[in-house]
Length: 179
Image 1: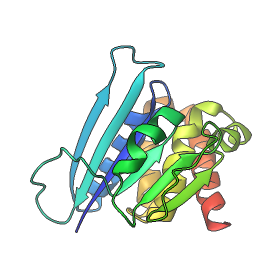
Image 2 (image 1 turned 45 degrees about the vertical axis):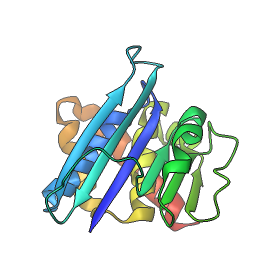
Image 3 (image 1 turned 30 degrees about the vertical axis):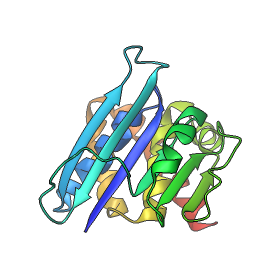
Image 4 (image 1 turned 135 degrees about the vertical axis):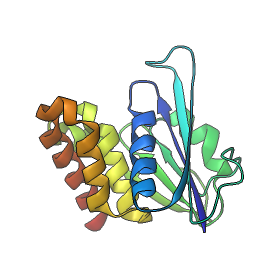
């Protein structure tokens, strides 16, 4: 089975990192993985999106027009990509920055106040980790403990921020489990 996830937002939100962490965890879990980043020349503040393909078979092409799921961290991302998501997929919406909904009846919509949760966990900069954890808790793509391990490995050189990211991760999971 193949699953495609598009992470989208603006530069500086950690879009590429979130996608990379999911891809890394899926790879460690034994799946075939493709990670295809795309971002505008502005970087911070510009458009950024990334597609992750996870499969139990070799991946024919990493370029995906209609992803299974979307993680939209800002309004332009939701507007641009929500219509592309396959029926039955998940459209994850950062409710802190997106005041509207996808207006689709054929998908699962998950709205989470990511920025508020990240701030309460200790830093707005952990919003991508909250989103990643919450999305994975709903989609159940990779083992959450393995994903946490990958986050710890990613931030090993910045060990002082690992506790913040672990708290952000746990809060992201908790918001989905309690909804």
